[in-house]
Length: 130
Image (cartoon, rainbow, N blue to C red; front, side, top):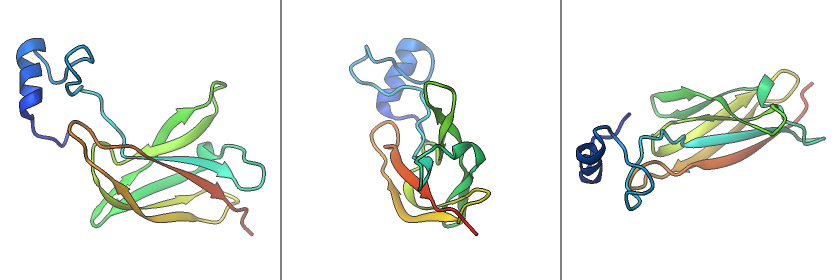
C-alpha cells in the first residue's frame, strides 16, 4: 500500500501483530484497500449494465490505472469497474466499449481521509456509436 504506517496504525500493530485494526478498536484504520474511483457503466437507452464489455483507465499526470471489474448485481452481472486504489488525486476517467461512443469525465477528485481514500462513484451512460 502507498501509505506509511501512521501512529494510529502503529498502535494496531502492537495490539494485533499486523497492519490494520478491526471496527472494535475505536474506529482505527483497517488493512482494507479502498478504491478511489468506481464507474457504473450503463447503456444510455435502456439502462442495461455494460461494464462487462467496457475497458477503462483513470489518469492523473504520468500515473494511469486500468479499471478492474468491481461490483456485480445480485444476479452476477458486472455493473461497475474501479481503480485508483488508495490514491488521492484529480483524475480523468476514460471508457470505451464495442458499439458505443467513447466516454470520459475530467476533474474527478478523490480525497484522502485519515485511513483510506474516499470512494467517488460515477455513472457512465454510454451512447450507441456508429
